[in-house]
Length: 169
Image 1 (spheres, one colour):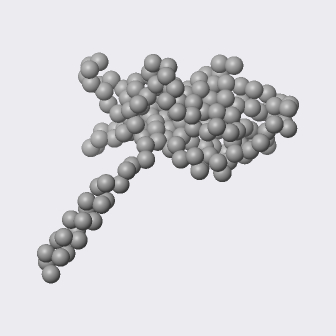
Image 2 (spheres, one colour):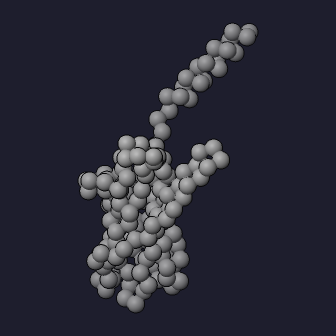
Image 3 (cartoon, helix red, strand yellow):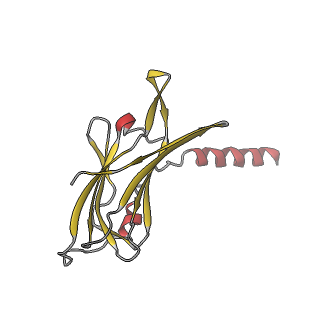
């Protein structure tokens, strides 16, 4: 009987270890729920913002890096207007596009926030990764706020810092 239980435990552990882990919040089903057609909304103002992300930072020397979890927070600062995010494209340190998180416009209701998570294991962006976020807002609406929080914990030590986006268009 003990051999059967041990065999079942080994099988369960083996199957559990082969599960492929999703890296970053790139599940298109999440964004499809927020998709919206804005083609008839011609009075919207266009904007583009740059947000720096650090999925890795240097530690001790230029030859050793420390991985971080990054949260790109996209916030509607209006308490009355819905805004629209057209595209969030993630680039690596060398300016190469890694992935686009949504291909159709999505909406953010007044005061709503949505986030993109770059997992600690996702080091594809490197030490100088960034986002370009394109958006549209109604006239006289406050601009959206884009910021990133990077963090890591190991044992009793923790590291965290933030960056703020800059409007580039």
